[in-house]
Length: 595
Image 1 (cartoon, rainbow, N blue to C red):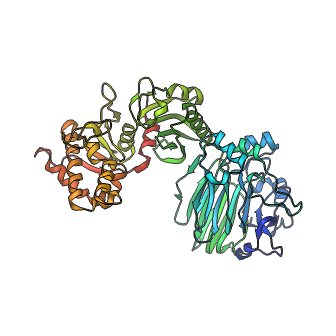
Image 2 (cartoon, rainbow, N blue to C red):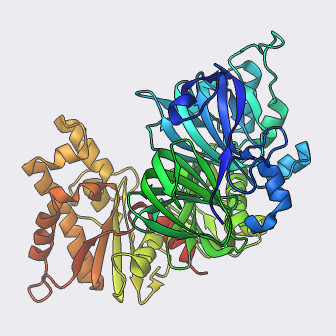
């Protein structure tokens, strides 16, 4: 069976134009906003343009020839649009599957993604908002003040964004995108710049009540690592609704399908089984077939993932500013992350609700085996509660393990953030293969964790590894809560930034480029590391945290300084390594902490 070329259905839009012609589309209307190149919607189905099924709509093809698709959906699940935003689109949000069924009696909600085809210089798009509570969000809608809290992201051609249902968003003037989404045209307009409908002369309809029900408040950010599948294929997203791959074709390649694929040429010309497909062409690749492709082309390819759920453990890194929630494979690989502003000034229940909402997104896709939380101390790990963390003022003496266990229905654990990072580095990072691993984070503060033979060493009162309070110079600078002259008061990112400001430097790297100040920092940090080695004699010390981003400025000097402070027989025996997991160590470790 050959690839099936599809003919687009064009949609007029108030904000449309003629720029889709530059991608090979042919139309006369000066206000075309969308070309639906793969649609089975009744209101605008694309049609088969080649082969034995020519003339059938994609909707009819799916109904009459299910063997071409090999999926178990009553309704064709995907929709591909090429969009010309010749003006700003409305601020909008889409429902998820459950809400679409409840409010619209439709099979699908609208999770979607954008591949940026073209954008003006310094272009941005709207992705999310900064309103902390539903009350703030609703008030902004009532007063027409929504724009002031919107988050704008800089964009360039070739960028990719996954836009989960519930995300407040909008494309902006001058941007062209290829949009891959669930098969739905349901959009809830929250704000539309008071534009008039050309057919009625009245402002376009808003859907504020439905939009409030659909929107994430607070905004939940989404990130997913891009994965290189082979020498010409890169996976941009894989979610419960579709996957998207970017194919960079420069030579002959043989490809095979299990279920159907939709392939769109976004740049160049693709030759598939001797058929030339220029930019703008979309093909249906039938299931269980092989194809020979060649040419010079960049293609976006999508399909439907299997229903099988991957087993994961979930890690929650609960910081004073942001909360990160990650789905982590059983091999310690971060598969995707959701983030939201922690808002510690709000009632504790608000945080629990946000965590529950985020983890619900993962339950749709993954088989969750465990949920682990890490947070800054002090903590009562036995009671599963916060004590008095200085950056979480409304959460003092609050239990978190018990209420989250009740809300989620999964086993939940709590751990100090540095201990969890130590576990992650020991199991999956720079400490893998060693029995005795000490982790040091040099960031806003300084923390530590010790792992011996795969077990976190917590101490009698849960304070083992708290090296930030170690006294280095008793006559050193004061600290708000720790000892005078402590390691944290001398060598943390906060201490370095304070010193930089005093000496006229704009940032920590500038300070550390100065020989005198770098020497002071190295000597102070080396004293702390030497004390660790003399106390617990680890195989390796792994260093992470923001200050270590500048390690190239002082790494060899630090190693020598530590060696100089050791017993002669111990000098050079303990390895110093930089983190391999970087900012993911906390959430990975959280996922694998056991009760």
